[in-house]
Length: 365
Image (cartoon, rainbow, N blue to C red):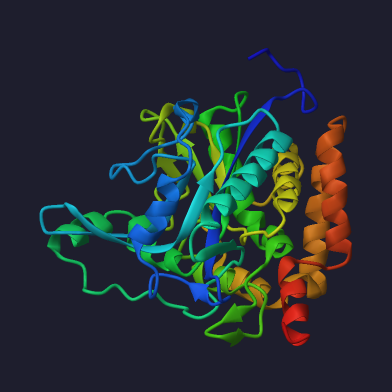
């Protein structure tokens, strides 16, 4: 990578991980209660495997994540640590690492279309929503055995892994070769602090237990504080930050070293919104004016924002200040500024996907 001299010329790389929820062809929601892992794995088996996806993507211990698409769920093991089943919640799609935001967005858009083509031969269809609209809680049945307890309770993320069975969201990833480990950790703290004013732009979970629940993001209300808003991936020899939930994690493959992973957004129906949010995150990484830092998310503030969204004047103003700071830092980066302007228009309308979902619901859809 060529040396860089300032914010305009600094080179970033991007990736998107997107969780797809599923519907039966009659329109009912499909989850672990009525859909088997093998039913989804048949769909995955029909999708192409590209050796060039690696080493960008991690396969994982069980081999389930062999492709850009894989069945996302909660894995159960016997007392000797052998996989015995996986309760599915949906299908996750991961892009390779791309040199541009547009490259990552185009890739996730194309891979969603490819998944939809494979699903056409099944009794399932993909959809996008931030939270299971019928079931708020995944119950671990039977209770964890001794082997599972040893392995599920050794980190904050493993202890709360069952929470993700009701939630759907992206991991928006960015990295910059100019940043040393201390700088990456500082940026993780920065984005964790400002997360409550970022997430309302993505809200897409206004339903819970079969009806509107009175807020815009059930996902944010339930997970943020127990699960990280941001994870930073460091090398084996880099100093980790002790926190619950975690702020840092040892990179599992070389491609993860230095990655900043924003995890608190809801799943977005329009992949273009992911691009806009990535440009906003890029601007906040480049910004040198915002002072806020937190090691763990402010759970109470996230829970307030989950209900009020951008309809709260203070939340709206806070999000606007972040857009302003990012815009100033993105000077000279025309593509990022164009995406940020589209995001600013959404912000001005106090718009999130949840508002459109509620409007359709109230219209009888």
